[in-house]
Length: 395
Image 1: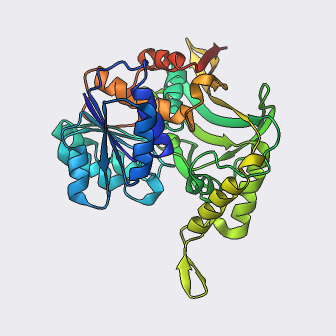
Image 2 (image 1 turned 90 degrees about the vertical axis):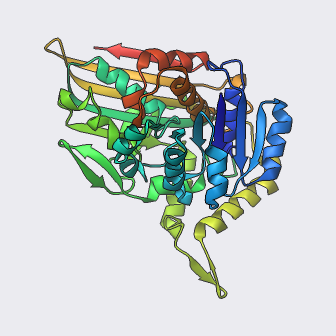
């Protein structure tokens, strides 16, 4: 099989490449087309991995012919180009034109509704697209499916993600993922599902404290723009069970949370709105990215060894067998040497899992969110293979 990865030399794309070419693969991979605008990054990754199945393709995603050539003939296209760069629908349509299966990592739900609206076009063309297949969204959607499958009637499902760092405090701000994504999570309003309908909620609203085991401890969660709440309450097998509430809430490490709040207060939430500096128009995001990159390089020796801990969980309330029932499904990702070469192993490994499950089983043409495409029975064993710990309680 031929797998095309657009943005394949970036942090998430490189992680997907690593996982695809590992001994965890469940499909026979002939070629991984590593497509990126950075030749240096592609060559560095290919040299490090030393796998002859890697094929390097220089890609300018704004060039329609180059984009078509990168996708054509592949068995699946994995889109890792950052959503907020604005090319997601272009790549989505290019995969349809090439009749190639498609997945992406989502991106705060920015294009989710537009993509789902193209379901019938993809179905008629015999093309499969599953959108938002990282950790959140992606794995989180399947967690919600596992909760929903335990209930005959659903009142609500609340979905949470918390990250915490252990070790000495870092004097340098190191973003957990794309700076634009973090700023959008803190500065942009979100769509949640309350009282049986989608409603807009203010940035950083919905404050809720939950006591979690160490190392998370007492965490404050907040609403954040994501795609799960746009699709899960409308999914087959969930919608008809009467769900009236679905929310997604975020908690980033305590001290880093304060830094992102401060940046939003300073005006960096409008990160793409140019400002004039000495007659030159610049985007705040470009300035912030450069300053953060410079600070990390300049103070590399001051950055302590820290370990990242993640917990992804959903709690569903409803009835089973006519009796009140609460279901909690969680996935914990703790430090492990397996994750050493990765940046955000959870997101990239889940991207790899999704692509491989699509290739492994008969395809369903159309556009789907993960909870509408994957079944828990085939998905969760792949998580456990990668040392993610899954637990479920039904009470």
